[in-house]
Length: 306
View 1 (cartoon, rainbow, N blue to C red):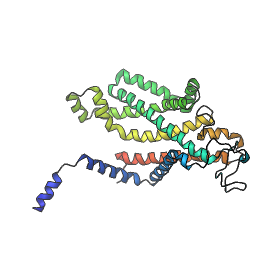
View 2 (cartoon, rainbow, N blue to C red):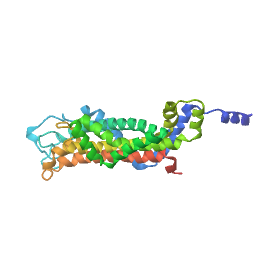
View 3 (tube, helix red, strand yellow):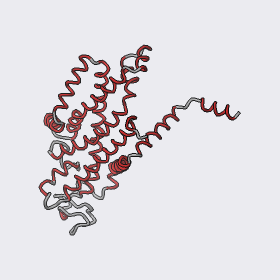
View 4 (tube, helix red, strand yellow):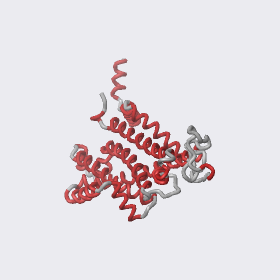
């Protein structure tokens, strides 16, 4: 009787909720084996919380100028004050507060740029991989032309045409990152297009749009998620580079690249004004890249550890 009951339970179909829980457990198992990825995740979550609650965490306004505390060194350096823990910049603004608010710019731009380039890249890549022929040739030659130009140079050209500012910088960076998603989506669609389940859906009368976006695309998401993570960090770097060159976020906005640009002439006599924004960029990009490595290990079956 007991054997019959066990056999019956084994034969019962597994619900979709149970399957999702099992997939999440498996994902976290492989992701957590990469210690660097876990550390990167914790740092990234901390950065997101800092950006969300910046108004509560920052000790001062990022725009307020303290004329009696110009180029104040960090608190632990002689002449410093715990009122300004990381010191002040050349016009007396608190560096810690500006770094905290600067996280909002970097994470917001990274999210918007990655979303734009991912959405446009998926649409174009699916069309190129599904239809092939002259459509594929035109699209891929255009993507090759974009990739042939250094990304920062192309972003500078586009920002020059559109005008300096945050919106122009986001559009320019999204354009430079889009070809990576197009090529990746196209390759994944070409690999999935000849599978039996796609053939069965086509025979059943599925339209081309349904085949592309409901049948094939969901099976191509793993490499796109990893690429999106890498593009997020690239977007933050490119924004900082444009800000440093004066073509991105404009002063007095507390963006990390703009902070570096404003402090260039004080590198030798006030090291803190360039060190802390540079460290903020380094830590953020490193954390996101470590997360990307963990996602690659967890989502790519070929890289999963036994």
